Image (cartoon, rainbow, N blue to C red; front, side, top):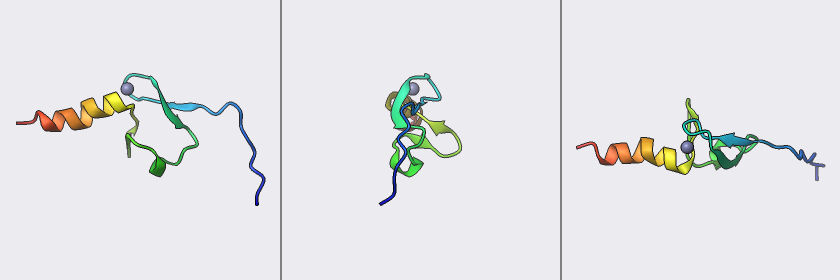
Length: 60
Ligand SMILES: [Zn+2]
């Protein structure tokens, strides 16, 4: 087993849109995150819903 250095001050990703902290640390692999848009960045659940889901649903 490897020794893992624990970094106390890990920062959390902030939502690109509203600036709110998400539950994901910057060190969290993007594959393990929800609401991460490749080429854009991390969104919070509310903004992700607003931008990617609500928009599609009301598009008729
Ligand atoms: Zn947001």
